[in-house]
View 1 (cartoon, rainbow, N blue to C red):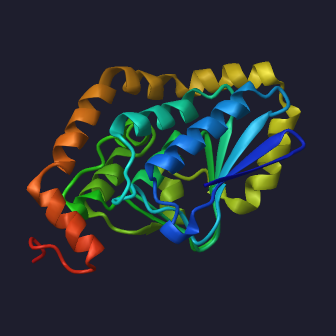
View 2: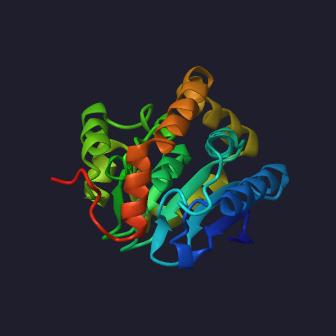
Length: 240
């Protein structure tokens, strides 16, 4: 489920399950964690680009084969702690939802193509963006986070840049990668430690509480109704 290539020190990992819209299943999360670990250990890799095949970066948790909350926390932390920069590339016109947005929050730099859109859709399923808060709340502008946590609305690249989710348009990608190639491995490692310190403090303080909160929400009657309605392509019972 992960397509891996390498060119001039840049490892590209592509989420490659377009039939499921790159939903975060237990197998996909496990394969991505293993691929990141391999990049961390490979001295030839200077930085990682995390991208996708198909029209969706990730649709969020796979409701039919979800990973455990602990496995997802481990994946997010692995991205944040990787001793090499991770650059997310969301292609033009593609979509990112829920847990996929949390993965973007874990990455060091995010570039997105024109027409890409994003949404934190958890509230529409009867749950909340609990675990993804580990990477999102330390990075996002608070009022924008509040709006999108509560409404589940779609938003585009300009708003994603303003709120701190996206760094730049994808036309900046080549320049960013060339700049990373020009930097020393030690410099990149230590600079990343400086800019991720606050995010890692959130993991230390809040991870267990958010995992338990997520598990409680997903086991609730409202969540069962929300997920059933989603899979049956109908409105949930609470819709006014």
